Amino acid sequence: MKAIVVRSFGEPEVLRVEDVPVPKVGRGQILVKIFAAGVNPVEAYIRAGTYAHTPKLPYTPGTDAAGFVEALGAGVEGLKTGQRVYTSRTLTGAYAQYALCDKCCVHPLPERVSFEQGAAIGIPYATAYRAIFQRGRAHPGETILIHGASGGVGVAAIQLARSTGLSVIGTAGSDRGLELVRVQGALPVDHRDPKHMERVLEVTKGRGPELIVEMLANLNLAADLETVAQGGRIVVVGSRGKVEIDPRAAMRRDAAIYGTSLWNATPVELFSAYEAVGDGLTHGSLAPVIGRVLPLDAAPLAHKAVLEPGAYGKTVLVP
Image 1: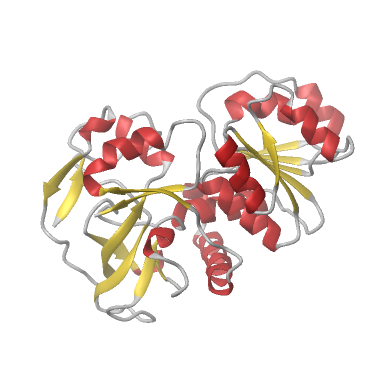
Image 2 (image 1 turned 90 degrees about the vertical axis):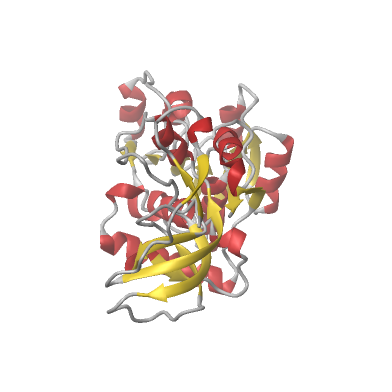
C-alpha cells in the first residue's frame, strides 16, 4: 500500500510516499481502508520534532481518517466488514491507504456524512467538546467566544455550542473565514482589527463572554482576561509560545484559566465526547466543513497550510 513515511524529524519535505505492507489485524483490532485522512496542526508539530511527545522513527502520521472496515480481529463486536467508519486514533498512521486501529477508536460514520467530512471529526470535534463541556462547563444561555472559529476545531466548537443553546461569537482573520463563521450561526468578529476585543465587549453589553475558547494563547490570553465575564472561564486549546499576563485581571473577575489536551482525556471522557458527536452527526446538527482536499503526495503542502493564518475548515488528504 501507499503511505506517508517520516524517517527523520524536520521540515514538511520529510513527508514522503513509500510502498509499505498492509498491516495485519490482531485481536481486538480493526483494519480500515482509508478514503480520506484529516490533517491536524499537532501532526505538523510532531513531524518537526518540537512536540512534547514524539514517536519512534520511522512512522506514518495521522489519527483521523474515514473509510470502510476492511477486516475485523478476533473479539471485535458491534462493527462489520464493509461498514462506513471514521477513526479517532490509529496504531499505524492515517496518512495511508489502510490503517490498523484499536476497536475503541473506530466509530460508525452516518450515510449523510462524506468520507472527507468523516476525516475531519476525530481530533477537532472531540477537542471542541472537551474544551466547551468537560473543561469549560458551559451551560445553555451563556455566551461563548471562540477564537480562530473558521478552522477545524473552531467550526466544530461553533456547531457544538449552538446545538446546546449557547450564544456564540467567533473570530476569524479573513473575509472568507468571517463569512464561514456567520454561515455557521455565530456572530463574526475580525481579529485583524486591533480593537476586536472591544467589539466583543460591545456586543455583550460590557459583560463579556462567560466562556472563551482560546486557540492561540500566546497572542490573546492577556486580552481574554480583560474581556471574560465575572466568574468566567478561559480554556486554552492552543499556544505557540509564552505570554505575559497580569494575574490581577483574573482576580478582579474571579476568572479561571483551564488548559486542555485531548491526550489527557480519560476513556470515559472520550466515550462521552464521541457519543455526543455521533448523535449530532446522525441528526445533522454537526457537519464538518472541508476547506481543502489534497492527494496523499501533497502532504508537505498540507502541513504548511495547516499552520498558516486565515484558516478555513479542514484540510484532508485522499490516498
